[in-house]
Length: 53
Picture (cartoon, helix red, strand yellow):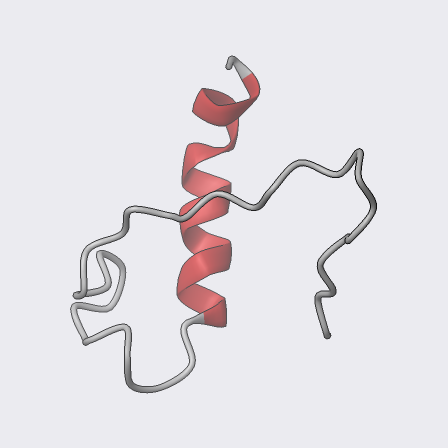
């Protein structure tokens, strides 16, 4: 899946995620390997907290 940035004037700029260099799900460096599954687990765990914002 490819994610494209919107370049229209009304689009909000993407914000940087302040994530640590070590993955909190698998305890491996984020710079190596694919962390799609880790990201999905993190999103599922924090979904209620993020929806409240």
